[in-house]
Structures are given as structure tokens and as C-alpha cells.
Image (cartoon, rainbow, N blue to C red; front, side, top):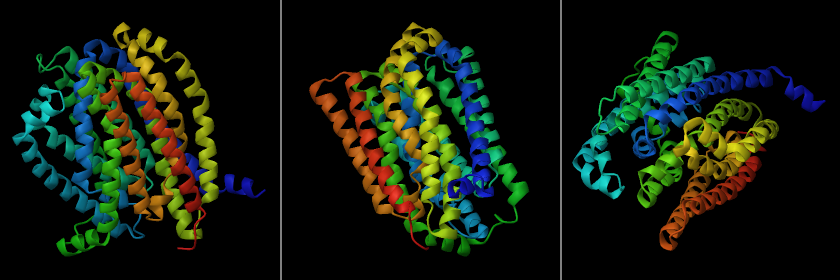
Length: 431
């Protein structure tokens, strides 16, 4: 009876509605990407896609520094005015840091690109600061929109960004703006897609919340930033290590096996881990908001965590089983023979992807309880073990598939530790 009451309570119904809104928007966005992917595969080679993947890997690493992870704290202040100050601070901080990073990138573009094993990337370091600003702003605007429980806005925005970005990538593949550097079509379409997403979210926030996010004055802005600085910097350290963990494979494969192999890996990841992660992130974003409310009201949310984990596990079982069985055949049939090897890599990635899909949505307790030391240590452990796998591959001349199996084993081990720790926290105490 108790479980039934929790399951059908207004809060639980609201959770499901918000999760469906975000998940539905992300799913539709992925349908657009999947629908146009055969065109992308025809227009761009694995090597071009590998260079684009290396560009985005660097982008997402640097975007952590640009925002200082202040956007991750937007859910936590009790008052919207305080959260509004944090939003404005991020919107100012991001381009300021991106400009400084841009100077360094432009000056050192040739040696940095050579170090990555992709000299042609030096051409695109000129536009990398623009990408950093677009990504940083989008994360801040997205968190604010979710704080205001405007989940349908976030869902519609995901669809729009996917349609604009993928559509422009197709157009630039046909009419290539840089014939000698075809990856430029992918890079420019990504920048424009992010820009459209930012514009739409910012306009909605302006018309709905402009009273809350009105300029507070420099003193109040900086005071609010100082109030959350310690948590934000701790999260930035953890997130920076996490981004290194997530993007290390593309950069390492690009260096060890070349851009074509990196492109095959990135393509496999794009159609196995990333779509599932978007759905899992959508569930997790709603879960974090609901868990924060439960924590402020009751001091615990272990029941919500159990229900959500059970749901994500059941959701993942059938799709991952089918994907693991049929990936090489499907990749070769849909994208062409040169992409079939990406399906073999996808089989391996989906084994670890199943565990992360079930766990990622419910690993928010450490943030809610501000256990930043655990978050940082956990991310460092993941990165250290993945670096060990890359080092072993280089030292013993292991194959690409062996490297991926080592990475999958690291993923399963660390997410198991993460799940147990967060469940113990979710039992909580009075705040």
C-alpha cells in the first residue's frame, strides 16, 4: 500500500510527466539524427568524422573551465533570485574565460595539433572559443530552465538543435565550404546548432523570468558567486576529470590508430552510448530536481532512488540486448561497408552502456549532499584506470577492440561503486 501511494502520488505523477517530456524531446532529437545519419555517413569519411570528434573532445574539456561548473549549482539555492545571480555570473564568466583560452589555443595551435596526431585541427582552433561559449551558455540556460520546471522548453530545444545542426551538416557536406578540410562542415554546423539553441532558450527566459534574473549589481553578483564558489570549484574539478575520462578514448585512438579509427569509434559511440545517455540524462535531470525537493522536505529519497533505478534497468534490457546482437549487421547495412567495423566496436560499448544507463540517472545524491570529495576521488579513479588501459595498449601494442574491453570493465566496476555509495546517501538525514 505504501509503495502504491508513492507511485501514484501527485509528485510521482509529476516526475513521470517531466521525465517523459525531456525523454521524449531527446528521443525525437535522436530520431532526427538517426534519420539523417546515412546521409552524413555518405557525405563524410571516417577520417573527417574522427577529426570532428577530436575537436568536440577538446571543446567539452575546455568548457568545464569556461563555466567553472557554476551551472551545476543552479538547482541548489532555495530562492530563485539567488539562482538568477548565479545564471548571470555564468553568462559573464564563460566568454571571459573562453577569450583567454582562445589566445593560448591560437598561439600554440600548431604544436598542440601535432601532439594530438591531427595537424589539420590547427585550422579549427581559431573557432574553438566560439564553440566553448555556445556550449557553456547552453548548459547554464538549460539548468535554469529545468529549475523553473519548464521541461517542455528543454525538450523542444533539443529537437530544434538536432534539426538545425544535422540539417546544416548535410547541406555543408553537399556544398562543402572547405573542400580541403571536409570536417569543417561538421564543426560549423555544430556551432550554428548550439547558437540557435541558446537563442531560443534565452528568449524564453527573458519573457518568462526577466524579473527574477534582472541585473542585481556587481556586489550582489559577486557575493552570490563567492557563496557557491567552493562547491562549484569542487564540482569543476570532478567534472574536469570526468570530461577527461569521457573524451580520452577519442584522443587516444586518434593518436594510436589514426583519425579513421577515431571516426569509427566516435560513430559507434554516437549510436550506442550517446542516444541512451541523453535519455538517461533526461531522467536524471528530473530525478535530481525531485530528489532535491524530497531532501529539503524529508531529509531522504531512497524510495525514489529505488523506483527510478528499477525503471531504468527494465527500460534498458531489451534495446541493449538487440543492439549487442545485431550491431555490425545494422551498421554495415544502414551506413555502408566502410562503417561496418563501427558496429563491431558498438557491440563492446553497449555492454558497458547498459550499466551506465541504469546507474547515471540516480547518482545525484553525492551532489545533493555536497560530498565533493567522493565525486572527485571517483572521477580520478575512473580516469586513472582508463589511462592505465591506454598505456597498456600503447606499451603492449594491443588492438583497438582489446582497449575497448578494458574501458568497459573500468566502467562497470566504477558505476557499481557509485551506485552503492549514492544509495547509502539517499537514506539521508534531516537537513
